[in-house]
Amino acid sequence: MSLDIERVRALYPALSDGYAWLDAAAGTQVPQPVIDAIAAAYSAGIGNTHGAFPGSARSDAIVTRAREAVADLVGGDPAGVVLGPNMTTLTYRFAYALAKDWGPGDEIVVSRLDHDANVRPWVQAAERAGARVRWAEVEVPDGELPAGQYDELVTERTRLVAVTAASNILGTMPDVPRITARARAVGALSYVDGVHATPHGPIDMAALGADFYATSAYKWSGPHIGAVVARPALLETLRPDKLASSPSEVPDRFETGTAPFADLAGVAAAVDHLADLDPAATGTRRERLLASMTAVEAYEQAELAYLLKGLSSLPHVNLVGSPRRRTATAYFTVTGHTPREVAEHLAANRVNVWDGHCYAWELTRALGIRDEGSAVRAGLVHYNSRSDVDRLLNALEDLPRR
Ligand SMILES: Cc1ncc(COP(=O)(O)O)c(C=O)c1O
Image (cartoon, helix red, strand yellow):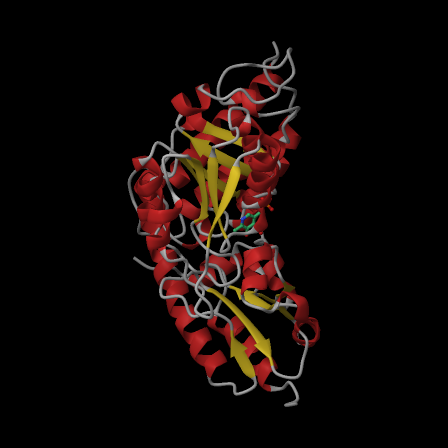
């Protein structure tokens, strides 16, 4: 099983602009079938949902297909897929809903490895409810989140454990099954942030032990749509604020207002695209996803090894973190240059990277770099080529030594 990288790259119109797009951890480009699916939805004519005419039925079908696709991608139940504008907004929504029955004496556990979107909504909801917030700490400088600390942190008082499946700056993949097992053992719920992890390998939210699994389509070649997946029976227990007039069944009760239906058509097309990445993959879409994403993981890990070796060989480049299990994401500083200067130099050399804290607000502070502009992030996905990596390394080599 393997990827034909040239075939894959040819599917993405944006990749032909001459830039090395190494900003995937901030958002991916979109392949032609996704663009076509969005355009086709508009061309066919789409009405609002639950109406009496065909254009409305088309929107109903688009929503159903988007839920089925996301469920296939993460190993969930389509009836438990909540769609929304992005992970942050959905997480605030779930934090409000879950915290309705938290109070003094209750505790939640968040981690300093996480993107702020899986921290602040919980911290603020806990503050409002009078619940206590406990923090899982990151080992510095390697950037691991030791799972053993959850044995102490998670107690009979714990209501929720929020943890990431992968750090969006260091790539660290903590031992999520162990952490969620600890939560389950005391009757607490787990909310796993899969936004960074999802594009980098096969995902099985049951194997992760996640009660809630959050993901964002724009990180895996889809449009700007977020999703949170949970067991329908669990969603049934929650009462989010909603209009009296809007549907009260699950999962619709979590979705406010009118959805971007054409973009949702793009979500299903993006999942189909991922499923077809390995042309040798066969079977159901879920089976093809597992095979294709396994091939993606192998491809990306080889490119990551090459990238890390290259970065380590540059004396003026300082890698941040050295986690054992990680996605194809590198975070580094360059001696004598601010992260923004490095990013500008790379942009001038047609290499797109991100600089700054990347919303890893607690982690960049724990690493002691947040006040200095943090660092530079190069994030690879399945469409990045060896030549993209070489261009990054060559441009870094050219930076004046200070
Ligand atoms: C790990 C992680 N979590 C959460 C988010 C926030 O996702 P969204 O932009 O969908 O709100 C991001 C976005 O960069 C992320 O990388």
